Image (cartoon, rainbow, N blue to C red; front, side, top):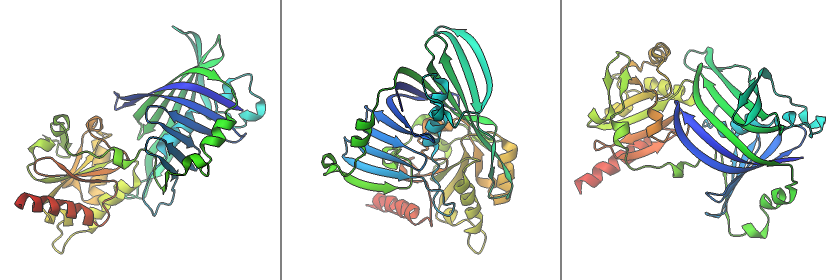
Length: 373
């Protein structure tokens, strides 16, 4: 069976509005998990979301892309965060509809609380569901001490028996990392099989001239986030070190590596460990020997005690900072991200993985070479 609806999605980061976007959602249930088709008319892009992959048809750029969910911890880390949020928010929708047969409700949501309120939309019933708390392994201490869980509130209109909205929380380290609201309209159960099959038949003649890609990350492409300079809001944003002193990027008149990291990002913690390992015979960090200042900034938390614990274990106390809320002024497409800035605050290089620093240092030397011309 199908459930189809229009949706207005609003995201809040660090309690500030991040963006609002409208989609058409088509969902087909197969008794186990639903498949989602997300039609983003603003970018002429259609996604098919499943637990294993996200397939994308971009009509504007004539691209077919399959983004696979890579779980191998030895490879690069790309969590399927957006796919998880869609799945968490909507996979149990049939549970709330009396006209759906019971066999579509095998996976019933875990409901912690139900309350009825009177709102401007009439009487509503709110179902609150919460995923079990998962403890992520801290690769520095070896302990499982970083709690992660998701929470959903589903609001049902008592008169129409339809869902009015869904609120999804991402709770990381006991604090709200991201809050997303979904306002839902025009719910119907029309069969979309024909649209579904024709759109994702990649052997169809309509895709003859499309380029094809297979990637291991989500469709929020890095090329869409590239920036050349950063604004004054970021340059002047207060950054606090572990001695309690406040500074900002604007006061640094040198090459700066902005190392954005978070507690629940395994590769971030491993990279902090690399700084300790990758040093010369005198114990100086390789990057610093190239005239680059490192600022390792936790952009999601101001938990100084836990940040200090990680800094001590990685011997990074001298380069460690926190700046909760900074994310609103710069693109951080993954939990961990890196920007190399020139002394004039131009963005010379950005990546989600520093690797052996070769590309980063190449970007710095190219910049220096251009200055001499």
